[in-house]
Length: 443
View 1 (spheres, rainbow, N blue to C red):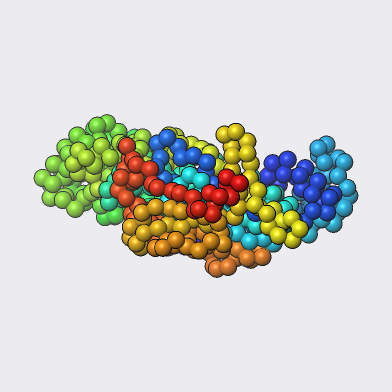
View 2: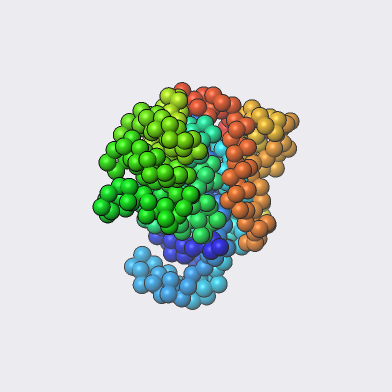
């Protein structure tokens, strides 16, 4: 499988480079620690699902300035006063040599908790900010939405269908990955299937039916190619009438899909026709502008639906399309030791110090989170969420498969209280600061 297609070192904001040039001119190679976290949960979210780490690590591993990159930078007016040495000897040899601690993908996280911490020479740590934020926050937003849809489906499979509504083909691939990590059964995106080993799923389009002289011919010809695994789209004209055609012709597809109309009523009527024709094993799948709340209503209605195809609502996360994520300096090397630092800006205050998050409770029951200093001892019954994933620029372990991440994330999410996971009126999960971190924050 091909798993990597990473952005280059120019995938950053200009001010990162102007600062890098300033640090270089001052000879500043101090270590710096930055933490990436979400300031506040969206109004309609009680938790987030971490995602995007694997692509973030791919980026750090491949991060370097090509000769073409450097030639472009030399022509920028904003960098016209920078020394030749910055372009000729410094940037060509620059690589990421730092350390990274991160929360595993698929794990639920909350406001103020670092999803990852980067400790590296300050120029390196600064230059990677933009891509780390965009990579982690985009996939985390999608995974968080997908987890809500999966929760609403109450054990029925959900397939991500949103590639054509994504903000570009690469966003579609990574959205499919994030959705799978968060619990979806598969995706319609073939590139995501090839790159990450995600199961792919698809039926037919309405155009297939309309391209034939009649609906039954369309169904027969499709099944001649794809056999009993076929899924037939039956709502091009009249879903119930199409179900009768299938029964009358003796066709036995694996499933039928309804993509429009009153899905609850139609699924009942179609089920009745299929069962009367001895097609009890033919499942009914539904799609068509579904979101978590629509899925929940269908489940609550008792509609005989086997699974859901959900596209736009997952891939673009329209009810929470962006997260208030930031990447902030929390410690800087001064006189040979790491010194905690933080912002005091009104409304944007940050808590200083390198942090760890402990989830407290039994293995299958999460009770609360404690955010403390990284060198503190774990609270009783607590386990650390951030693990050391990159040491001196090298990965500590091999990349994780999306299948392992999906299963471990599922267990971590089901450990949350059900009142935190519910779609509406969810309760906030308790998150507190350790005594030592509180003292540092108030100093």
